[in-house]
Length: 348
Image 1 (spheres, rainbow, N blue to C red):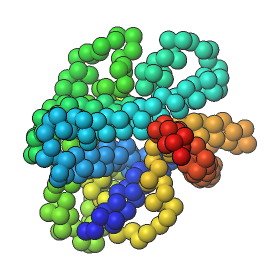
Image 2 (cartoon, rainbow, N blue to C red; image 1 turned 45 degrees about the vertical axis):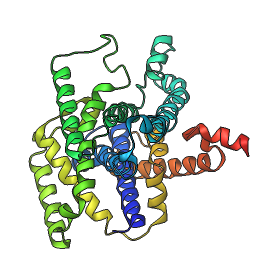
Image 3 (cartoon, rainbow, N blue to C red; image 1 turned 90 degrees about the horizontal axis):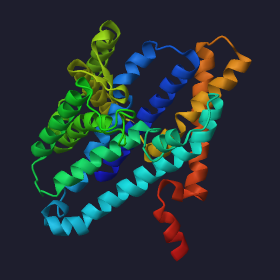
Image 4 (tube, rainbow, N blue to C red; image 1 turned 45 degrees about the horizontal axis):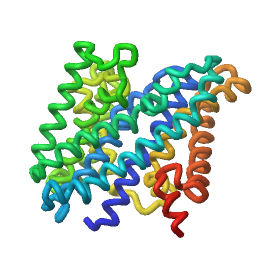
């Protein structure tokens, strides 16, 4: 598989995942119930992001010549770039959009302004749990990469151990700050997320062996199996890292859903809109909370009784609005997603 096509399907997976996030957020905000569509989406809609992040992370960090550099070379070279990317492209945008959202969010909910709550939601990384957890997970992997080990199984076992550690900490109510259990930076979700990041790394390593036997007929069979399992046994599958509610059946059904999504995306021809969404999922993610909530408030004024048609319209408007906002930001203020671009513009 050529590299360009490889990137294309990865972007499609991320695009479908973030679109699913909008569908669920609109459902939760407007319909205020979890229907069959939510059940079918939940196993992959966020877990696929961590899976793809693991695929991309290990594909780069374990590639030659990066993995062949010494610890010192890595620390001042690619390792430094990795940490800076985490800081500038994940952490700082998370803080920035948390600050922007904080005041309107509080006012819409009729809540007052509180300094400690403001710091918790912004500098504490507790408004956008996904990017906070991703930052924690990748920083932990960076520390392990300093060992300069090349075997993907070592990293996978580390990810499994970290997820198990997170499970034990949650089970025994261990927290660093009793008043704010998710501090620092949604670390518990970050530990859970490492499991899917690790599976993403394994998939990168053994992709050809895993997917070579999946033809169109088998893919359809897997899709039917997935739908039947979810609809008949939805109560058995715990898949939500966001609320630390995940179990082994949930992990299995999530991996099945991600595999199906990947194979579907590999069969999709070039679609520029999907490619754009996939390349800018972080920006869309920052819009996926506020837009459905504001849209639902407006929708209830016109239609007090929720309906599937209203949900479909709200979802479409929210996604189109997010597309427009992200497009404008990328064109006129790209620094909001990476403050280093401000410095580059000044240099020009």
